[in-house]
Image 1: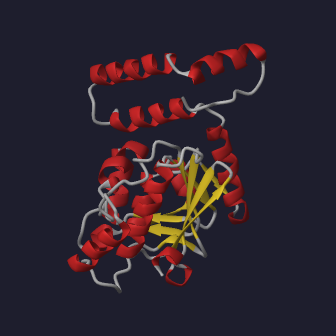
Image 2: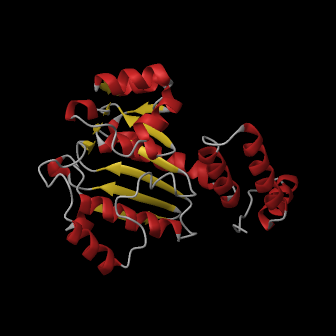
Length: 265
């Protein structure tokens, strides 16, 4: 049943992950988190996937954690699930989408609150349908943002004051307010959301895969490093890039005025 609640399909070089529990507004269960972890691992190991789109089915992205289920998972169930799936990562590992060395686009349809808002924050780029709503509602449940994306990534996306306002109030904002504060890069009609996400993904797959991988790693790891350490890491990545076939192809294709044919090596 869990596999039905989180679906994954490949469209050429784009992987599409869909929270698929529309009758429950895609409220997330521990089983769904485990399934997301499996999908993320598959994407990481599949070099033919160059970009990822995360979205929800029906009228919501995700209404948060399914609190009608057990608040804490049964340890025996988790252990059995790990053994059965031969998993090497925790099914509840946080920030799974920032760990993918490929661009991840969140296509926000309808409400994204609670852990739904956290999954959106873990994506690299967010676009919103006109129906989209976003809320860090954790203070109304007596907890803090459950993957820590709200308290770490959100201030870096929208500024400390806007992040404090969203987190302290627990209010839910609409798509245009998301655009105003820089939480999403664009707002489109609901009917155009997925086509827009696919077109955006294609602009990312046009770049050299190794370059994009290094860029994403530098961006997120740079949040924790000093400027000096970041410059050293960036230089190390640049030195590696200079030795790749893709660098040679990038220069050759430029002079030959043609699209590059990347090999990822």
